[in-house]
Length: 297
Ligand code: GUN
Image (cartoon, rainbow, N blue to C red):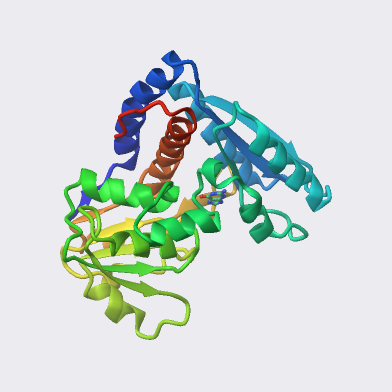
């Protein structure tokens, strides 16, 4: 039996700590501002964005939301980005992915002012992270690091297997965990869809991070006795519920929890941490832009 890692509780503590920093900035004359941009009407994205706006309200960040019609030309999104880059009240913003097919997402990422790039996706910020000089840690990897820290999971010398090589989670998390740092110093294996003998790589790991987007790919047979399991997956699968779907992770929770020493649930594990770290990055951005120092959690 394993300990259930309570991401909701840890995220709530981080938000509480951030409130002090936000108050410091606000008292010094600048209320931190976070904008969310959504192009199109993907229902999951709409939910994520509205949760992010609700988080802003809770902690005292000025939340601004911009909708862009899904059929509008790409230039309309680029113009929105240019406007946000120029808006002094917006310290950070994100363009919710996925964007419609006719929009070049890499151009979107390159166009965001790196100082306002609270996703941490701009090439300048990716480069800084890899070089060990991160300005913004991408929210989900940072959230995973904070969860491990909150549950006293030592990364130094640990064998960590990450399943998934996305630019949003797998690649930045691998880079963060190999840094020479207290929350790094791990030996990291990154697996993906072409990995052979996946179970061999997960079974020997002290920490398994599943971030591959395949419902319940990782089951108890693939987890070593006593490993820590972090499930980043959020998959909507058809179910006989009011909404017609349920959320499941990339880990088969019931069987994995029989082997793991600690495991995150879905929902209530990594998701709330991702959102908390977006607020964190907004505070970092506002502090950097105003020159007002704050204490960060
Ligand atoms: N879509 C899914 N995850 C993310 C994220 O972390 N940032 C943005 N901008 N879009 C996403």
